[in-house]
Length: 164
Image 1 (cartoon, rainbow, N blue to C red):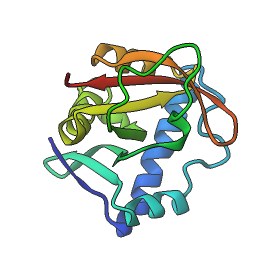
Image 2 (cartoon, rainbow, N blue to C red):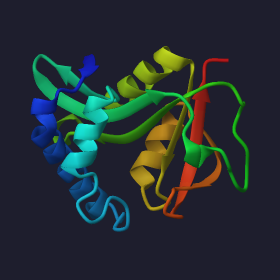
Image 3 (cartoon, one colour):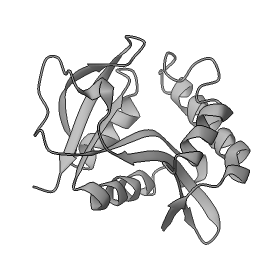
Image 4 (cartoon, rainbow, N blue to C red):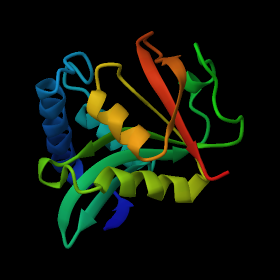
């Protein structure tokens, strides 16, 4: 598997993968995450232009897309009902989506390891109703740390994994 930066010309293809992820979320009982067309093409383009959006592919076939950035995430500054594993610098993963064809092949694990190789310390969050994502994170060595709130006030379950 190869991971590379996404390109602007790929925004609509990325949007299609996110739409597939939304359908999967709905089919697994997660009806409240990624609503109202989120993530929009505008968000996708902003992520690409900031060089934070990645594509995971194999032999020209797209397997996943995800946001990764090394640096502070303001929504992670306050955590409730728990604590982060450490206060070291970290990378953050957001908006990870595996294609339907790649689901169950360890693609998310490959993306997590890529991010961990870049920073050695990764934080990520997910919706309480996103049980497949919670399972994926725990299966891949992430530790549940507590609850964070997004800028709009929505609650998310926070996880962290570090090399130390």
